[in-house]
Amino acid sequence: MRQSDLSHEQRSFQHRSPWSNRMSTASLLAAADSAGTDAQLITAAVVGVAVIIALITWLKLHPFLALSIGAVGVGIGAGLGATDSVKSFVEGFGATMGSVGILIGFGAMFGKLLADSGGADRVVDTLVGRAGPRTLPWMMALVGAVIGLPMFFEIGLVLLMPVIILVARRSGLSLMRIAIPTLAGLSAMHGLVPPHPGPLVAVAALNANLGLTLALGVVVAIPTVIVAGPLFSKLAARWVDVPVPELYVTVEDREGAEVAAERRRPSFAATLSAILLPVVLMLGKAIADVAAADSDSPAKALLDFLGTPVVALGLAVLAGMLLLGRGGGMDRNAIAASLESSLPPIAGILLIVGAGGGFKQVLIGTGIADVIAEAIKGSALPVLFLAWLVAVLIRVATGSATVATVTASGILAPVAAELTSTHVSLMVLAIGSGSLFLSHVNDAGFWLVKEYLGVTVVQNLKTWTVMECIISVTGLAGVLALSVFI
Image 1 (cartoon, rainbow, N blue to C red):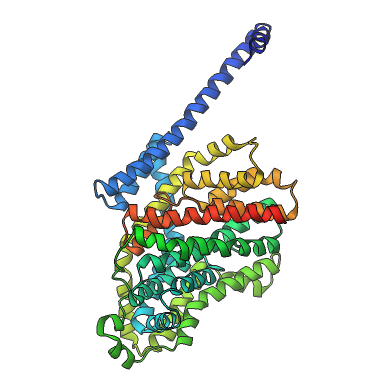
Image 2: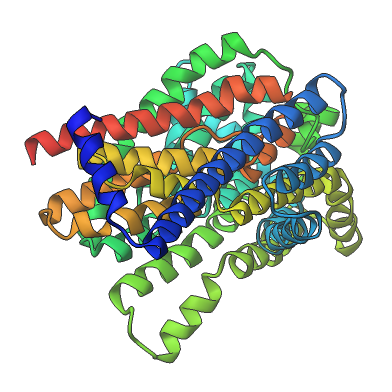
């Protein structure tokens, strides 16, 4: 501050009443206290993440225990209080188990049926037979994008994980050459293309045109999937060379191709129908939500029910018992045994994913998203880059793409009101891209991928986390490029 300005402030202060002096002092103390609290929140979050990584990688503590300790520690360190920290952790754990946990359970049952019936052999043999080693990663990226178009990421992951693992096993390619392209297709569609929840929230908050946003989202998603999928998978395979997990062992894996060929297997059409059933149900709900959003008709209510993720995947399990189990010559005892044996191997995955959700909820409860939102207000950065940056900061801090999308959309809503329809849609995509950035230990999806692929925390950071960053940055680049031309 210049000397003349300082003198003016001093003169003004001297002419204020004693009450004004006390009010000014109180305001200054409040501001200082707020700054201290903000610094405390950010410090607690950073230290908490570092402690969790150290507990897992250095002390070799089980991730479930490390996440539980780290979550409560972050809450206490951020001033949330011990009791409220535990309460937030339990609420987050329960919410994650109530959504993702059920999907993982149904997905494990479906995947085991797919493997035991011979249906997975059908799909994998078809994919491997029609695509050579050079084109197989591109094929898997396409499969991930198509399945991911109407699906929640978690559902697409649990449905496609048997295919990912078996294709890697049969083709002889590195696990990362198959997994990364598939995951890139799923994740890019989840963050960029309605009717996924994140983009839909941003569309509603910013009053964007849904059809235009969907079209532009597909345009941005295509190069994003290519860069983060088949192209990045080459580097990922060099950085992390791990064996294919011993999951979803099929008849062909156990007894050889000749024995598997002689055994009755479900047809390719029946297998594909079982896999695509939840895709069709969720797509039907999404179309109904767009075309008849305000309708109270029985047909709309039925589509809403059948397209609910838990219902859609549950129906897929029931259909799999008929199409895959009976189609593969399995009797009732064999089907029951297959379903029963599918759940014990995922117990650890469920606990770890739930703890990741609990940690995320503790971070949200500390109010760190509000701190970032206040810090970014009034910025002079370009609006599309600012939208992406806000979503990035909140995503990294809380681990929640939804919280990042909702908060960023709320902050940018006044700015969006002054933009053209095209740029509002591009802002939705910028926020969606930012909400995918840097998935790490406070994201339940990070642990889901890690446990399924059987990699370490560091290996998952070098592959899955880097892939998410590439999707985010490439998506932003696509948005900025489109803003120049349209």
